Image (cartoon, rainbow, N blue to C red; front, side, top):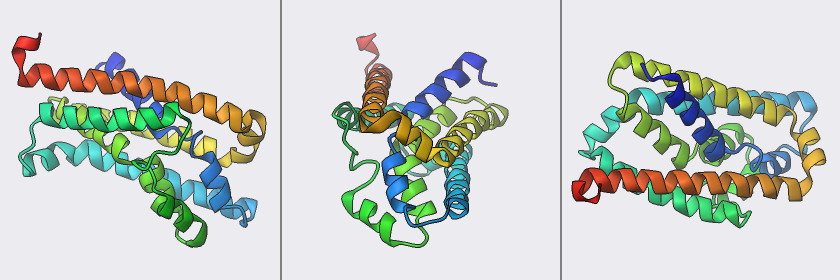
Length: 210
């Protein structure tokens, strides 16, 4: 079983990567014409989808890597580069194309089924979150320890739900400046995580770097 330190670290990492605060402007724009009840239903669907994606990544991520013959060090380096690109965009308070392209943002406003795509995937449960769960799953030695990964997934889902149902109040309190500040802080955290992932992968591939 993963120890509590690892679970807390994974949860913090996911909070920074999923970053529901940064997704509020898109969520509010996409659900602008809906009633409060309808918007809450969209929030529930988004939350369940995020939890489902993170859970699937945790339970089956290891098998996906094995299926494609990808080693963990290679995946860590690739994931680290992905995180670094995401962090650069967040430090500039920009929406990264890694999370959501402009076309997907436009589609969110026009589509009826916007809760799953693109709000949940890839805006929240995007490549970064999926990569994080797959790496955590690969580092988990047993099926029981992988089940432990569902706790951070559930906590992140709860944070997403609370954030989305309070979207109006949070947006009014923080304003665009407040949202940008939080996004930049999360970007800094992700940048540090990216360097750690890249370093761990390089050390495994080239032991002399230790």
